Length: 327
Image 1 (cartoon, rainbow, N blue to C red):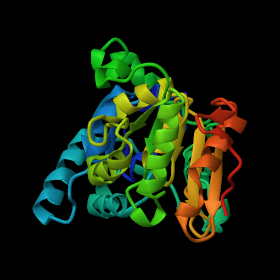
Image 2 (cartoon, helix red, strand yellow):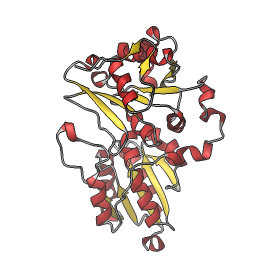
Image 3 (cartoon, rainbow, N blue to C red):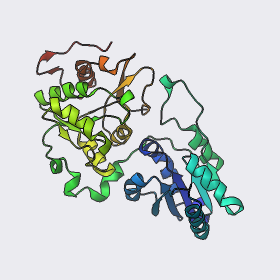
């Protein structure tokens, strides 16, 4: 077993929440293969909290800014003193390449994921990670054969009050609205507002979640949907995972948080521009609705009908049967 020989392992994963979620099975493979090793993770600063909760790493740190020469020199010295026997760079981004170069001839055995070949945007799937799989094979490890599963994220805080929907004033059935940060790929605020009103009329509390940068977008939605519970900037990744596990469904567009939601079993609908569809999670109960140009052409009624056809809600809403379709 590799785990009997290795004593100190470094994993690098710095390329954002969606990619971090997608790589979760690979984290498991590395942990299992090096069962006796001390495994350290370098990641993005905003992912440290959820990473520390995982069962895969013994210590977690944020990747520093390697552009500063003095900081880079001090950090490389620290890494060398840790005497890592192997490095698994699962991001293979600019930060990882700079670190590889800075380590020079003193670097340990270094395995890097190769970028996946470019595909047509219509078929691009985030969980299709041949670069990571190939890296694991090269390192003598077995590639994972399962989808990401973040249900462990709630284990250490499952009894905490702030992990419960009631902490946010949420009661009864609720659905998650998860807009992305890029306005060009986002379902309009007016569409989210109309959909939130549909939810409220049928007994589903509309809950908006995402990073604090979306707070003004949340204000736009709430202006026409006063029943909205706006949690933008108010949940960490662990709290969002807990909410997603309890939610009846989600509606999203190009949000990284959507990948976290599906990893705990939440199901729902993605709205997308056909020219630039979001990176959909493979193997999940998720339906993508596309519009040719204007995202607003995907009507809230049609999203509701899709959720109904998926068996996630009833067949009608407060205004009667739904028949609208996206154009």
